[in-house]
Image (cartoon, rainbow, N blue to C red; front, side, top):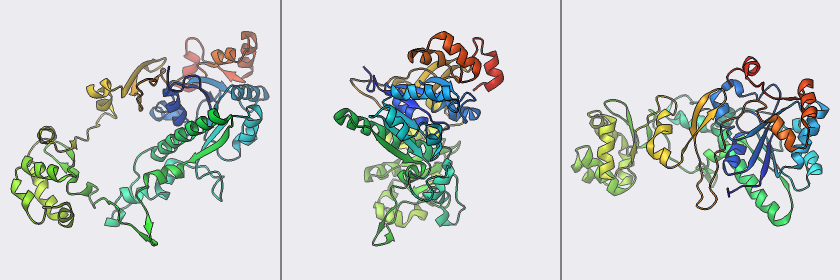
Length: 407
């Protein structure tokens, strides 16, 4: 048994903030059905980001604006425990799959929208993309160390999207527990702004004034002389010597054991006060050896450290032997891409393990399978395909390649 075996989720989402949460729920064992436009998900053209939030889903391609297509969507809702999407306010209602519509079809349905700004308020009807919420939550200000005189820095693609999606996983699983206990469904929502707030959880006011929080230095190397990046002979090394024994061990490894007792650096508070002096002392030391040499020596001494290597967009993480052993990687065959390796299970269970159920699907890859599950016969399916109400790939995928490319 898998943790969410027997749970069905219908995913009407596109791009990242919508589909990522359903993928995680699918990894936990749920049956996730991706409802995709016959023209394909809008993020397929981006390739890798699309693949990063779609694996393990069964895919049916439907024209929801066609009456027959809407009827198929309603049949899916009637069989679902959870309906999930990230449409802008009003779009789902206009299509006929808003919360009120779905509740009429399935009174105990759990209905989740991962909004941009939220369900209510003056910005509720605006859509948006991830960097807007990085900016609004102050993340770009902090990443750029603007307080040190730098310009703001766009942190990375999809950060608040992913946080929003993971919050939606918590939301729908909590609602599922409530549904199982009471028989009641409900509407739940998260937002990209919520995702930004999640990453700014250390920001607070006391008496109307900001409480000091760790901040990056001007070079954006870290927040403390013992909690930062140092350049080495061949690259960089991140250290995190936060405990006093780690500080003493660090001094020994870099060849300045006497510094551990220097009044300027003897305590965490004094090291913070004299941070610049300490960094000037340590920086030339780290330049004397390679990152691997330092990392091995620090490991032996019990000083937390890591080499920030990712020159090939994740190859090292995905082929790291420990990550493979821990199940943090997954491998499967994709119909067009061939052998594909991605991150694996993010949550482990002793009795109800997760399930990585195959690669990201093609547009409409499981259309016929899902239509049969909905009790449609092949003749009717053929008619709907010919009419363009639904779509399924051709057997040899030649027409599919012309229509959608590699993705």
